[in-house]
Image 1: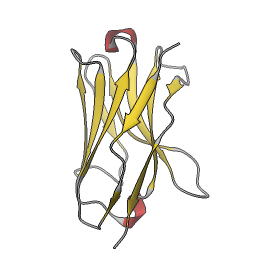
Image 2: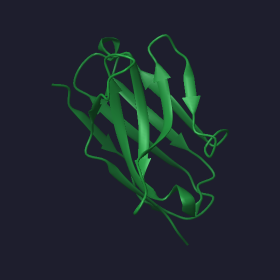
Image 3: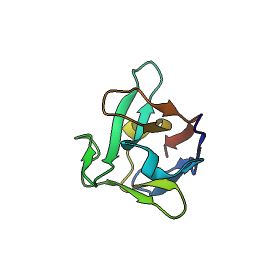
Length: 117
């Protein structure tokens, strides 16, 4: 069972930046896709960004041009660089690892991001 540990969440002012990290207990080569999701209070969990094993990236429309996902194969980590943060970005952010295209994957415990002045 893979273990995913997120870190980097914090309280930040609008317009600020944060970098989230997800430490993965297994090689990233073992997974079809890695992703970041978020869940705001009273809302469903939604996809923020994903990287497929062969390198294709996909982002939610609401974060395109502001958020950038990356992966470090040697350190078995994935990161989410978040720029130009808005109050609507406030949510718990979760790391996800999928072994196949149609699996729900495994989840980390989440890290809280709060954007407020």
